[in-house]
Length: 345
Image (tube, rainbow, N blue to C red; front, top):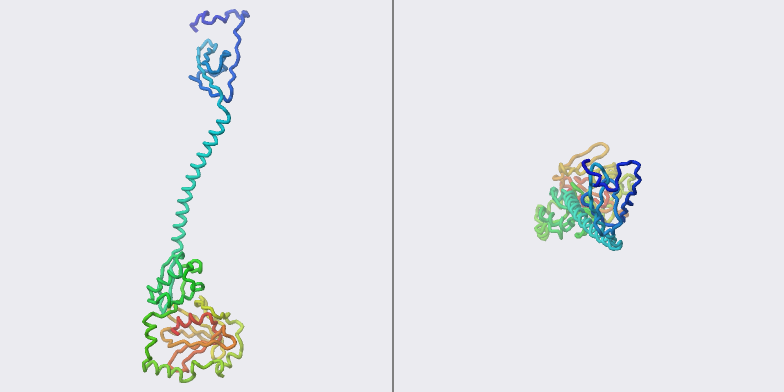
C-alpha cells in the first residue's frame, strides 16, 4: 500500500499477464550446520539465491502488507568425532560432580545413623554385689574390661578379683554387645576387696570360733553328706522329673523365674524365689510359702551330689544350730555361685 509498481518490476496488474518470474527455490539447511538468524521475522519459507552458505543471504517476502528482511549466516558443520569427544568429556565431568555430591550426602547420612546408633546403645545395668545394687550406665560398644573398671569404682573390688556372672564375661576384650547385655539387665558380681582379702589372713576371734562350733555341732561340713542316712533317703529317690537342668563347670546368673522341681528334707517339692527388690528369699512348698529376709540368713553351704555332680545339696543356715538348717536337694550346679553371692554364702 502506497508502493508504486516500479517497486515490483516483475509483477503485473493484469491477471492474464504471463510474464516470467525469476526462479526461486526453498532454502535447504544442513541439519548439522550451525545456524544463526538475526532478527527472526519471517514465518514462511524464504526464497534464497544459490549463494555459498558462508555468505550473508538477504531476501524479501513478496507481500503487499509488509516488507521483511532477514539475514542468515550459515557455518560449515562441525566434525562429528570432535563433538563426540566433547560430549564424553562433559559426561565424565558431570559424573564426577554427581559422585562427589552423592558421597557427601551419604557421608552425612551415615554420620547421623552412627550417632543415633551409639546413642541408642547406651544402656543402664544393675550390678548386684554384697546384697546391694549398683546402677551403671555404659555403652554396649565398651568392653568387659571397661565394665569391670566401672564396677571397681562402685564396689571397690579390683577387676582382677571380680567374677562377673554373665555368660561370655570371662573375656575382657569382648564388647558388651557381643555378650548380649541388654538395657536394664541385672547381674551378680562376686569378689572381695583388698581389705577383705587381707582380713582373711588374721586368726578368727573367739566369737567366730564359738559360732562355727555351734553350727558344726551336729554334722561336719567337711563330711560327705551323700554318705549320711538323712540325705541318702532323699537322693536315692533319683532326679525329680520336673527339676531344672543342671550344668557342670558353668556359672550363670539367677534366672528370672523361681528355681523349681527340687526337694526338701521331707521329700516334698520346693521352689526358691529370690526377691532382690525387697531383699527376701521365698521358700515355697505345696502347703506354704515362707518369706525370709536375706539379711537374717547366717550362711549358705553346698555340696555336689555324688554321681550327679551337675546338681548340689544346698543348706541355708537360718539359725545358730544344725537344726536351723533348711536343706534343698537337686539344685542346678550352674546357679550355686549366684545363690551364695545373693544369700551371703
